Length: 172
Image (cartoon, rainbow, N blue to C red; front, side, top):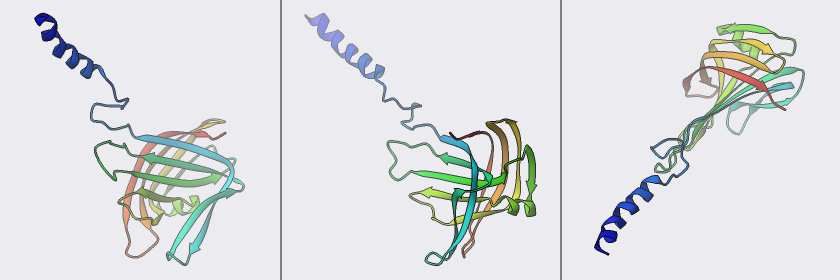
């Protein structure tokens, strides 16, 4: 009987260590989530929002390809209000197969970004500096490289950098 009582704590520890909370890593956080999609026959519509004194943008039916990069940072169980993400949208003519747009040329892409989360502003950011380049891999995929500065359309001006290389896929 005494021997089985000695084993009981060991079994308890082994069972406890063997349990999983289905998190992607040992620190209790999920992994970052990145989606990179392309919408056919769409456009980015830019409108001025009087209430918030800023340009807003939305994706509407149109005659271009609209690329959307959506980054959502890891969520951790032990951190309150750690939600954070950012979105970058830009558009190209439907018949494009490759492109490089730098600095002043970026304005022709109608590239905009915004961040979301508990501790970021809801400003919309126009992409005016840097480089966006891409090559069509096949009918459904593009390889896109971005290294740009997002600048808020409000005063005082805020800026942040967006940099990545990602494969974008046509959304069904």
